[in-house]
Length: 293
Image (cartoon, one colour):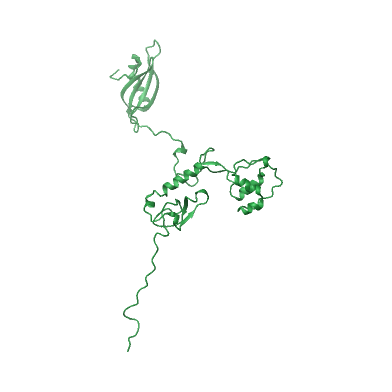
């Protein structure tokens, strides 16, 4: 066997194990003579089936080896070639495990013209208003349904526009408001999106914003005051208005970004007040007037 080590629980067939020259010739035919190194071992795959291993000298394939499988039929003396493949060894240099694109995506990867699809069951989103051909899907909040049922007068008092006339619409069973009335009010209130942020999506966004511009950042730790008292803060609308706002100070590091109300920087509107300009004292000697006679 020319000093090759036998590493198998099954005793390899002697004639197949001795066919080192046949295996080397097959490996050199597949890769080239200069890419096949020393014979490093032989393993028994089955009865009269063994695999010869050769060192791989291909650049970038450290620890890989050429595996040439040979076999012999029962009661036959001739050894035949089965297959030649390149396999990694225990210390082989391998490529990183493949990761799906949606898991590889990172903030900032989206460029001009790129489209980023969202899954149907995206945890960050939940159903919004969905009007079908015959009925309205029950995805509206209760207060919106009450607003539509109250009529045009109550809707105007609540800050919504007048509900369109929907006498031609069929009333839903159970005393619920008609589909056209709810759709009209939802359109005036800007609630016609098919999907909206879920509670999970809302909390995920808040965690990201607070990590980048929150009270634990070095800038906020050294700030003279927090953003809650800054005149450059533009509060958000909705449920996050008591926790976040948008910085409108062009000289601040967070200009145009959503910041926590507990964030702060040296650009706080009340951190320092510019002193009034000091008026120069009158000259001791009047060099402009005429000398008295």
